[in-house]
Structures are given as structure tokens and as C-alpha cells.
Amino acid sequence: MTTLGSASSAAVKAAPTKVLVVEDEPAIAQAIVRRLSAEGWSVEAVGDGLAGVEAAARLVPDVIVLDVMLPGIDGLEVCRRVQAARPVPVLMLTARDDETDMLIGLGVGADDYMTKPFSMRELVARTKALLRRTERAARVVELQAADAPAPPLVIGDVTVDKAQRRVLRHGDEVHLTPTEFDLLVALASSPRTVLTRERLLAEVWDWVDASGTRTVDSHVKALRRKLGADLIRTVHGVGYAFEPADGAQAGASEGAGA
Image (cartoon, rainbow, N blue to C red):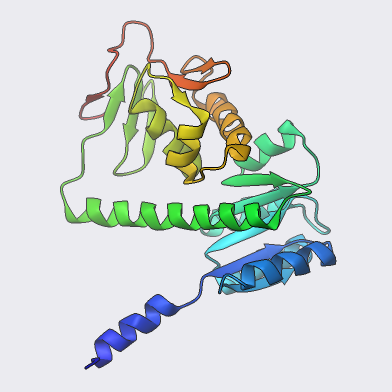
């Protein structure tokens, strides 16, 4: 027999995922809405930047698919305003294969990006990966709140506090996006060990298609801009390795923090 409490709980779990699409090209917007709605998600689309900011505040979406080039204010400014109000996973769409645009987008809080034209299959897969990452991060926070928090990870002059999701270098706090933080944790947890792009893509983005490895490259560049280029070594054709400062221990140590 189903109790009222369990029925109510089931209703909460059954609530559809809310997706906001901000795209000014009607044909593309309609195609995205149809495809994402087919996943059982509740999808709403708007066609300009200011409407995107308003819709994000009104809908409180679980994920946003956001075009860079928009009338009114562009997607970068939309992302900046939305993230300032409430952190939310953002998948950016860009018509130009321009690394500068991508780095700026990642810098204002986007979690991933895709260059037009793109396949709807990949769009769905990447959106699902963003949602899984968000759920996984929430579970980690819940577990840490229930148990004694793990001590910060200290490698050379870098301190990574996974419980508070804070990073310090030379004692100064470095503000990272959620994706940048997760990428740093993956690299710093195995210092001086080369991690392939495919492994990082799977661990950080929960995305297993090698077509997304350029996303890893762009996020590494964004991370270097904030932490310093000396901390992450490129192994050409393979991946990346976290390199502690000279004289630091090769293995990560747990400490009390800086």
C-alpha cells in the first residue's frame, strides 16, 4: 500500500527536468526544443538575451542551452548575470570555432560549449552529462555534510579544499568555475601523472565520446590563466599532468590548509 508520504516523494522525483534554451534562430531553437522535449524534459525557448535572463529567474532551470550571439545582450553577458544570481549548468552554442570566444565563455561560468553545426544526439548527450555532474556534486555535498569533512588536499603551494570547493595558491584564493574546480581535483589527485584527455572527459564531464576532447583543452587553458601556466604540463598527443612546484612532494598530501 502506498502511503501519502511515499506518493508525495514519488511526485517530487517525477518532476521533469527543466531546460531553458536561449537561441535567436527560430529553426534551430525549435529543433532543440523538439529533441530535448522527446527526452521527457520540460523545455522553454526564448530568442534574446534579456528574455533569457528573465526566463532563468522565473523558471529556475536545471540546465541552460545558450547561444553566444543574441540580440539585446549577448550570451556571455547572459551567462554572467545568470551565474551571479544562481549557479546553473550552461552549455554554450557558438557559430564560430574561435578559441578566444570559448575561453571567454568558460571564464564567465559556462560548463561546456558546442560549435554550430552540431548533431542533436551530441547535444542530448552533453546535456545529460551536465545534469549527471550536477546530481553527483549535490550527493557529494550531502555526504560531506553528514560526515566529518575531509582535510584539504595540499600539493606544493596549492591547496584544494574539496569540502568547501575552494582553491588557494600561495595562500591567495583563486575563484574557479565548478567545471574548473572538478578538473583541478582530477589532475591534482594524481600529481605528475599523465591523464589522457579521454579520461578527463569521462571523469569531469561524464562524457565518453572523444569528439569532446577539445572541451578539455579549452578548460585547461582557462585553468592555467587563473592558477598559472607552470602547474599543468601538456603531454602532446596524450593529455595533461599536474606538476607541483619544484621541491614539492610528488604525491598529494592531506593537510590543514593554508
